[in-house]
Image 1 (cartoon, helix red, strand yellow):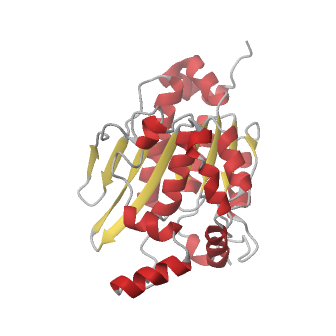
Image 2 (cartoon, rainbow, N blue to C red):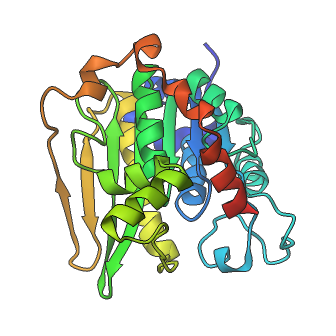
Image 3 (cartoon, rainbow, N blue to C red):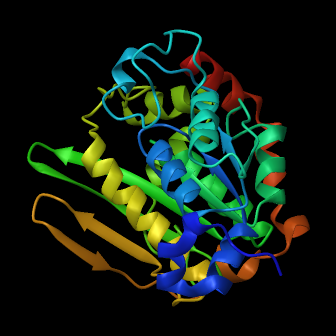
Length: 294
């Protein structure tokens, strides 16, 4: 058995050589490489995972520079795909890590394929719709999934959460980590939204201002996610299913799942029954994402 590089000495002092070898044998996919995804990429590279597939269809813009780990002051805007910056960061940290950047959104054949071939999947989204899709896809193919979220719901209140759906004992749905109204709105066609607006008198599209997002809060959430991943892969302990971070207090809390979850038990490991690929047959999802990214 080959000797591990000295760069991992301090890792090995925590979780042993066998733990480091397990990390080195792990292939991860990160969907959403922005303010949350970029510090996560950094942590996973420093931990020494074997290979990494960052997936994102967006380019760097000027407002990302306050929190995008790995972005340089002279990276051109436009024309700097986020996945390429993430891949560069990985290679600069450790060129022995395989990295395969994919410039695509979640609802794409490329992203779905990246999930299916991964050992662990991470999601770093701003909306609950993509979270629900990835939660179901990972359940269908029995992929351990870690979802990250940062939030500033009102002035003076800030934090985030990490959800680990890894063995069928809890997921975003049974841990009440999703807003069903947001999921429904995300999956609806424009015609369906217009129909609801006519009935209920609500706008077709809720106008949301882009909220605050800063590096330290994102960094805490990314570090929590990387720690739960590290603990699970190396065998230090089982990961916490849901960690809520209240940065303004500050405080951390955990939650337990509801029983008899359809996603955890009904379709887990049953891709034919789940048919998560039906999301690929919803062209309005890709078109809406294309318009947003463009």
